[in-house]
Image 1 (tube, rainbow, N blue to C red):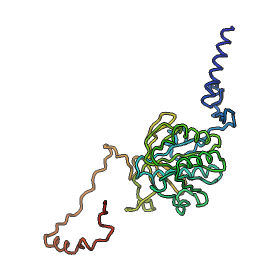
Image 2: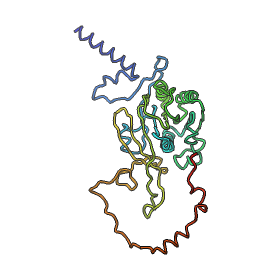
Image 3: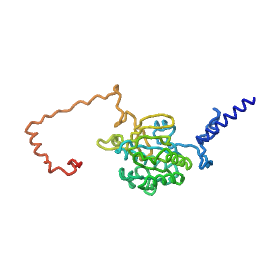
Image 4: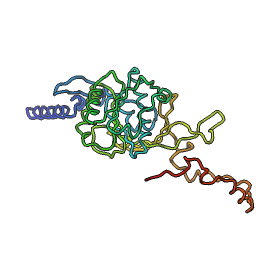
Length: 329
């Protein structure tokens, strides 16, 4: 009897130690199957418990992506958004602005802070304020932009802003893999996001994967846009809604997946593009291959007509300047 009591006390002590290290409630380690699970965390600052938050998710609107994320991106955590190549900086920023609009709607339309560190804004440009309202519902006064040259100063601003519940979300945009943005720095951002109950997004340009405290990492690049939809059908030669190729590179559930999303500025949500949709990046199945349309009338030009058409073409000197090749030297 005494031996079983000592063993039980040892197990309870181990559970309390594990819960203290992981920052979760000890009751979560021994909740009966019939009892409802409460997703709570204990947050500590200087070794003292400060407050408890219920975990919630920020849904993107894409059903399959939200399912792979476990209901959506965490609403009180650090999330990484990567643009793998330099040319993907605009697509990653557009996807992040969509998440900023979703976060603002969720948190009583409070302002969003966007911090650009080092050469982030020099390479990708500033967020275009006049177009934000039509794109993601952010007026120029709802987006606070901070351009900081030193990464250490930008990181300090992000850490201080991440603990403020008066903001809807905090975005930190950096370029590459700076040494100062290590596991310890991202752990501080993640912990302060949990304390404030607000999302913090780490937007990285041309960065490789490295260990961070972010539970999720998304790789975002541009996807081909579909033609604009009209009452009469797709409008040929037009450009429809912004499209993104999103890869779930890191997640707590160890689930990986690739998704093609379109941002709907009217619904302020992402929509998943199906493989059978026009303009999809996924090729059609061979069983459902569409036969090629019948060829029309073929016209043959006589040599004299070809020479006459060649004389009507402008010379090299008459071409517009923007048609000439750029100098690389």
